[in-house]
Length: 266
Image (cartoon, rainbow, N blue to C red; front, top):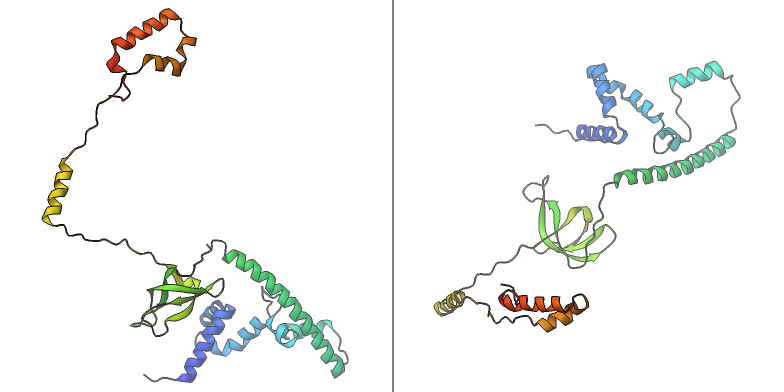
């Protein structure tokens, strides 16, 4: 297959332009309307894009670069109809006006860009979760695969050596050419160790002793004590609520059913 670097550069430039300025939709419409002669209409498309105000800056690209908007065919016709011919300004006066206009456009564009950046960052970080690593934490790193450079895989684990900034960390990965390298936090995720299982070898004597211990079933000693009626009276203050006959009756019942009233429940 014949390779043409110049054609590849043109194709790459058109792809970058289409992705940057949102020209994919325009190219699609242009190809449908013009067919094979779509490339002859590219200057008209570029002129249209350069004379349209951008949402972020509030100005057209031509105003930010040249200090004034490009004169499209409609503008020329409108000026010819509406404005009478005037004498040209002096060159120095025109240059000062142009410089002042460029400066004002630059200041307004910077302020507008800052406002739009804050707004877009707020929307972008709406569902974001803040993550942070400490020195010594184990992490996995998202890196390209050796077999396929277009594929990525998680490698590691690596160790966090130092926190460079809020989003960048110095990570040490053993077994690589560069053992320590700076990575963005979006390329890192925590590494969790699996629980270690240790196999223990038991000889016959230890096995027999363990079996004997398992056969020995401990039983609770039934040395329960019967409630002392006098202690019950002092603890509950029954003498304040019952008269003598009721106290005697309660004492008889406790003595009769003494097995039911023990310190340990049966």
